[in-house]
Image (cartoon, rainbow, N blue to C red):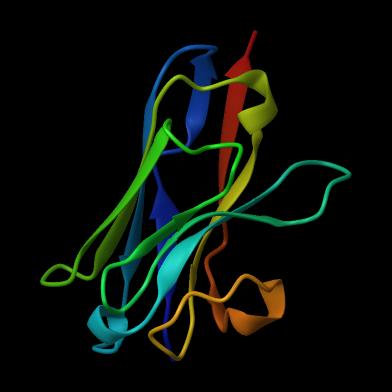
Length: 123
């Protein structure tokens, strides 16, 4: 069973930065796609960023140029550097992983989900 544990959320002012981290158990981490989803109250879950088993990346349009996803396969960790945060970035952020190397843009394709970490951006 794969476990994903997020950390690094919190309260920040608009324009500030936060770095989210995800620690993953299991040896499959390096060869499969991993990423970050977010969900704001009353809204659907949104794929924020993802990185494939081959290290190609995908970003949602709303975060391009502001967020950077990275992985450390030796440590089984995933990070999301979030800069120039906006109030609309406020959401619960989830670390996700799937059993396959490719990034898939549908929520149901992601097999494993962390418990989430809250990010709140004040104006």
